[in-house]
Image 1 (tube, rainbow, N blue to C red):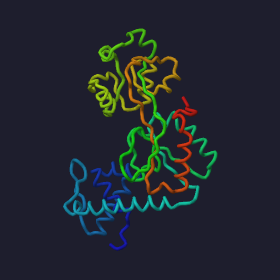
Image 2 (cartoon, rainbow, N blue to C red):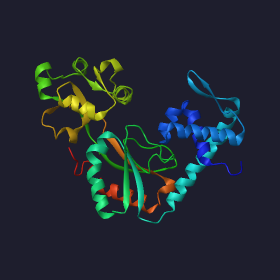
Image 3 (cartoon, rainbow, N blue to C red):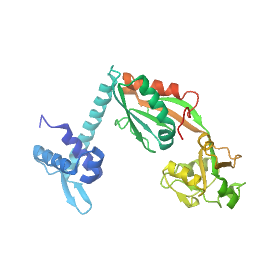
Image 4 (cartoon, rainbow, N blue to C red):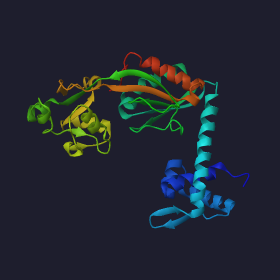
Length: 299
C-alpha cells in the first residue's frame, strides 16, 4: 500500500463521480478495459470491494464511500503539484492549453495563435472550444478567454475590450415578416435562443424584459448554429455587432434596446502565472486584443 499507484486512485475517483466505466473512461481519455483493470488492481491492493454493479451502473460500496474523501484530497494535491511544477518552468517550450468559446475560438483566436507561433515556434498550443467555463484549477486549460469576470481568488485575470451586442435578422426575413419596433412585436417573431443555457433569459430579465424558454422558437446552445440560422433567414438573433457587420445579409434591428456589452477577460491560475510559456501567451494575447477583440478576425 505504501507504493500505491496514484493513477489507480484517480481511476477510482473518476468512476465514483460518473457512476459508469464508459463515462469515466471518456473523461480520462482511456479505454474501458484499461479502466476496469485499474479498478480491479486497486481492489486487489486494498483487499476491498469498492463498487457494486446495478442496473443503473456502478455504485460505491460502504468501503468505497469511505475512501472517496481521501481520494478527493489526493486529487486536489495532485492538481496543486501539477500547477506549481508547471509554474516553475523557465523553458519557452512545451504545451499551453487555451480555452475559448465558439465565437472567440473560431473567429478571433486563429490569427492570434498563428502570430504567436511565428514568434515562439517551440510552444505547442492546444485549443479547447467550449461554451462552458473550463476549470483552470483542474488543468482543463492553462489560459482561458472568458465572457465574464472570474470570482475565484486563485485566478489571475486581465480585462480586455468589451464586445458590443445587437439584434439582427436576414433582410429577406424582415421583408417577409416585418421589422419589429417594440418588444411586444419582437416576441411575436421567430427568436433564436439558447436551449439549456439560461444566459439569454437572465440577461433579458436584468433589462426588465421577461422571457421564458418557450419564447425561443429555435433553440440551440451552439452559437455558430445560431448565427447560421439567422444568416439562412430563420429568425432573429442577438450577437456581436462587429461580427454581424461582416455579413451583408444581416440587418440590425431594435437599436433602441440598450444591450449591455459583453465583457472579455483573459484568465490563468495564479500557480502558473510565472510559467514562462504561459506568461508569454498571456502577454501576447493581452497585447493582441488590447485595442479590439476583433483584430484580424477570420470570417
